[in-house]
Length: 81
Image: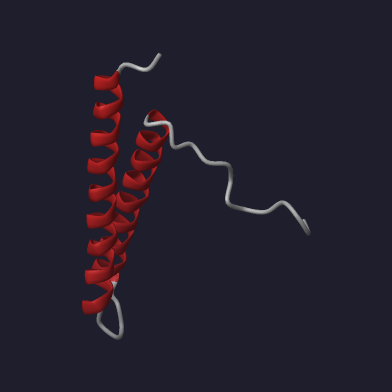
């Protein structure tokens, strides 16, 4: 039987992980809104850092979802490959 407090903790962790991932995605969007027409090395470096952070936080969110029992099968179809 699942401990209710552990389940609540897992859901809270998942909510926090989702919020962090959302904030990281919003940071990428904000960067893209202010991106100059001709990006330079500083913009490429900043974009790489933002995307890396967003990807890590997405992985954290997925791990938290797994811990909360929200594991889902792959969304990609193997048909036609």
